[in-house]
Image (cartoon, rainbow, N blue to C red; front, side, top):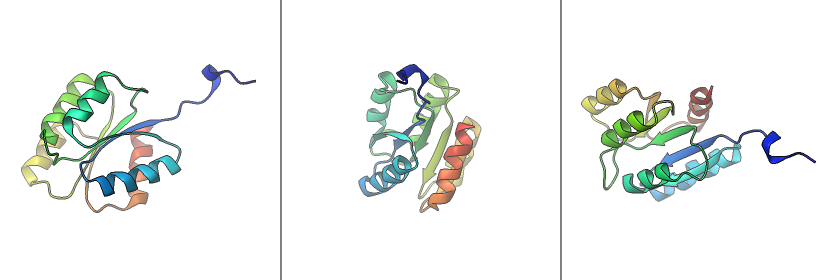
Length: 129
């Protein structure tokens, strides 16, 4: 019998996306690839998950435009409170100034939506390496 401590770690992705359809598709793809996925539709939901995570978070996929909190402000907080967790930003309409600020904050990668799913999976894998 294999003890739980000897089982391999299942990488955990925190997916922060306010569009439910996009969040559902991304979640299904990530789960199919073997990731444990925690989802949040708002900045406040994200902060709640970060305070009491069900599993250590290995990478964050973050939308810039959220209904309640600026994605840039949320990214800054993520970088401050969880500096070793890679943040990958996925946004449909970020302004050049926003992208520059995200780069300054140290995001791992920035994607424009719609994004190629194979590119997303490769980026998540690279962020985990």
